[in-house]
Image (cartoon, helix red, strand yellow):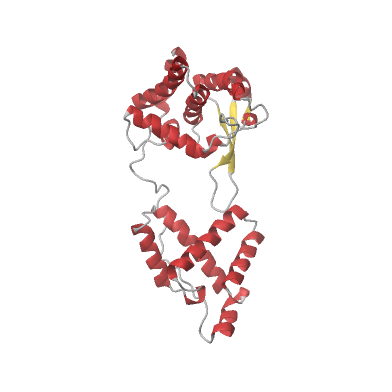
Length: 304
């Protein structure tokens, strides 16, 4: 019965046009909830949701936004089961006896309401002007040190230094940056001086839950950042030997760099400099988006 319910829910979501990479995580979450309660859906009650939520907050230490997302998925499954048009209540009573059927288990008193636009950690913050300069200088220094030491990793260090400049220069997210292709750069008639790097087409922007990634074009505004990308594309990337690979950021093994690798390199640089652990790769995006006063830094980078 439970497996039939899941098959039906999958079909319902697919009929709404949802992607498999949205549907399957929801199904896995329902299975996790089943394992937690040790009850089948026709035995679930609101108390199970409350106990599960407390375990997520206490043991898993999940953020409120994450827990609310889990609750929404359980609510969707519960609403599907209790919708009379699908007949699961009648099927359960016929199979298990009178009065045994799914009931609504999520309501306004046992789920987290969405009250704020931003629910991330208040400790997260953008870079200060001095911190940004220090971080990007350090990334450039790693290239010079690798060259002087004549050791491996020169190309990777140059790639990463340019990558961090792109995150800041175009205000991108980590995943958006990792998934950029060479073909994503284009011309902007209003900024002809940047040539074919006048804008970048972001194809994997942050999506609304259950929807495909959002696309957007981001205009180039910082000359020093454009120069860094041009130098990388024309003089450094070809040395990786991945001419046929579409990715902008390639690895020495011929693959595409992963968001986790970006995070690991960022943390290594941040900790080596003794900067605050509050700073993350997303802090570079925050700095670009909310700190327009940092734009004069381009003169510093050009001079360097």
